[in-house]
Length: 128
Image 1 (cartoon, rainbow, N blue to C red):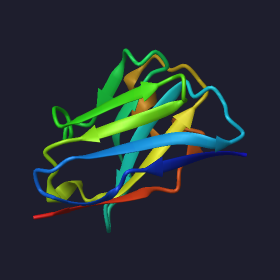
Image 2: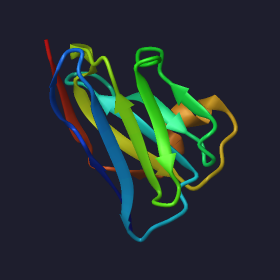
Image 3: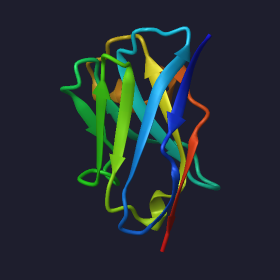
Image 4: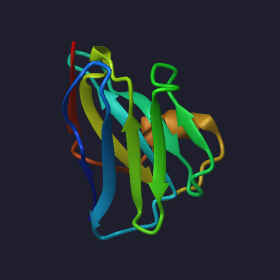
């Protein structure tokens, strides 16, 4: 059973930064596509950012573009989400997701259904 484990969440003031990390535990696999989604209270889960297997192609939601940066370390099968200039509206549970397929179209990266593996989530709270 593949599990993804997130870390790095917490409480931060508006304008601050946090760095989330995610890596598989248990049975490891070749994570071709890795991404981050988030779910705020009372809202549906939404796409945040994703990265392809090479680390060259990255995708972002408009709401985080220019503030968040996704990256990966393939030697450790780990994905990171650097979050700067945080806003209270970024408060949510952040979920890491991964899949073993190679996708070439943005729609696959932003859609939840295209990710086979998910983490349990890590809480990010931004105070005003």
